[in-house]
Length: 432
Image 1 (cartoon, rainbow, N blue to C red):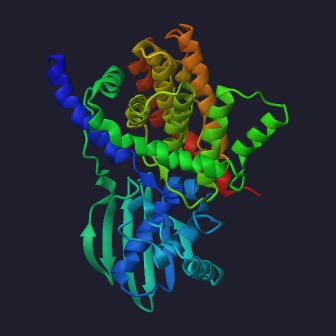
Image 2 (cartoon, rainbow, N blue to C red):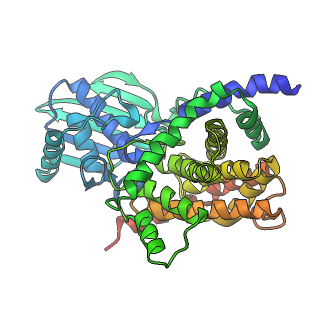
């Protein structure tokens, strides 16, 4: 196949992948998935819910039990289900809670205080599963979501099944096929595709920069970004490009995990992954004073590399996927600072050698720490690439070829960390 034929085959699929996987999301996407199920169930019920029975998969429980739900100031899945049912937009997808009112939040908190939210772990094989059954008297409506955060597999009202897809066979509604694409193909697309084809990705910079601005105020989560900036002012941390990468990227995660009512541009179903793939690239682009097209190409490269790696991972696993999203950022920064595919591939390889073991122990304010660590690793790997240095195929799970290194990382997450995931959840559920 000639290169032009390959481009004609792959480039439309790359655009589809970006448009499906890089979308706005308000709040951590696991509790938001339950909120969406509750909102859709409430619409089917047609009346104000009086109580809610909610079931989620173990992995969704892990990712939802300690995160602040936007607009509520409250942690956990129970409040997500309550406000989703009482005030969520059933057509809002990952922005289901965008229009919440103070009264709806108060009513949701009252439902929890009254013991009218029952939350449990579903006995399902799906890594991602959220089910909400809302009640008014003896009337009930149930909606279940599986395998992707907005993938509805069951709708029923008063026992009548309106939609049913076997959850064991449910597939995410992916409408793209990356086929035999390589990292080099992704680079060629991001750097050579017509600008009009990828211009939409600039919205990632707009949304996630607004989150970073909000987080720098120091009001959210562990306020790590603001803390780092204060240490610069105190003389304990040097001002410079690396520090700006860390503060801006981490501040966006602080705000997102701390319940800010601003959407993040997500990647692969995660706001933190979207932030990790966006903000380091934005900061470097600002430092270099590049034009908007150059920034857009770097963002397209970053986000698509993040998607390209993430499709080899489970939707939820013991591997922290902020690390893989940051490999996209490493690619984007390498493009801005060097321009060559060689630098891009070296940076990704070094990051796999550096970050492969970072665990996901649920969504929480501490995710911003992992975002910070991953952003720092990305910039370090880029600096190594600029000096012609990388973790080589003679070391660990890294291969000489970057695509094989990515495959190895996928195998580690999909096969090697299954028991790790089980132990993480057991530790979290039985802490004293």
